Image (cartoon, rainbow, N blue to C red; front, side, top):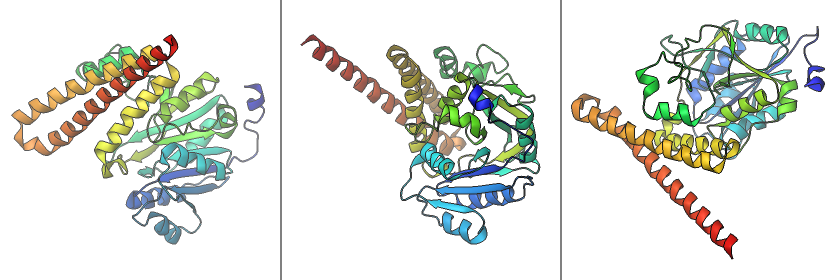
Length: 338
């Protein structure tokens, strides 16, 4: 940490590079860029939009309406992690603000976050308070997933007992997001990252294509001694689902794969297998709940049908993964016995 600390804040003005990875989210993206251009930061704001081969005219619209914004056009959808890494490589700011395309930055947000980072040189990642379109505070932090808190989620204990620290541990349901605190994970819709910390920790792991990279990256910052901090003194609005709404089942399965990747990377093979079993239980419970809701509330049929499709697809994927994992282990065992 000492070499990185030598590169920390001095009296000179600090600059910001904003990186926005976008895929077919034109309307949201234009709102996001407009809100960023309204921020007042002494060192200036460099805005880089990384377009993952959108088909809705997003890059052309940004280039036409905001000529000062740098647009990087990928020839295919590289996903969230690689898209951000491409933007990071092209950036020059002392601080990197990685922001989703469906976020609107509230006035004064950048100035407040930059000031707090300058005052606290041990912070590697800072996240603002996130609110929804109706003004409700969104969950934007979480604890590292464990078998215990994953089981609580699977059995919906965190929903039944939201004030419980025991059952609400993974999603921090007992906490109102009303005070500044160090956390395990800041979810990836809005990160402010210190470049000196990034130089030590490294880029996002591109094996996590869409989800899971936030948990992995924050763990790496924490493991290297850099704090990950939630800061309610700055605020941004997050609409949510701008890209995932285009293919909800596909994105839901991507989330399952990413969660499993995290367990494979950071835990033993046995623990990763146990996670798959808990994941199976999670979706079996959800499927049963969806069936009951559909049977008792016909007017909610469309929503229940979408949830049914997600749960069914997740169960199929988990069963296939368990089967493939078991086959791979049997093959490895037979090869070792030869």
